[in-house]
Image (cartoon, rainbow, N blue to C red):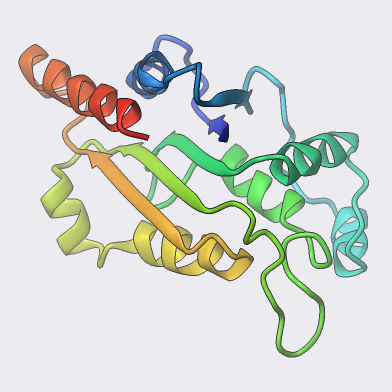
Length: 192
């Protein structure tokens, strides 16, 4: 299985990067092929200009990175996303990746009743961090990311089997808690 990993965090020393690196460590490289995209290291511009918006409506793009990113998605069987939750959703580069890469005619069909076009990606996992507890985040903000990304965007483009794992209280948790979380990520990856 080809696993496409996408991370959006500006600091390579972040806990989000530790989570991703632990996930990669746990993957059986004899069974799975990895393709890692670091949106920050790649200097992806998330802003959609007026000209890009016009191209989007035609199912086209102006940013040359979009073609590469679409090819990487076409060859993926599994998607793994890593990012912190800022203001109840993903950071700008991840949101921009969604806006600029998941084009009509590529990720979903055009028309009044669009059909998903990326259903060859069988599953996705989203690893996130929040400053508040996971329980508080999910309860007080109505599971926003689950609705927006899992049940919304990913389902809309054809990825039906999604899992969201959030590590709350990032930045204030005990060292033991961090190790517990990383052990969970390692086990998750080993069981893919």
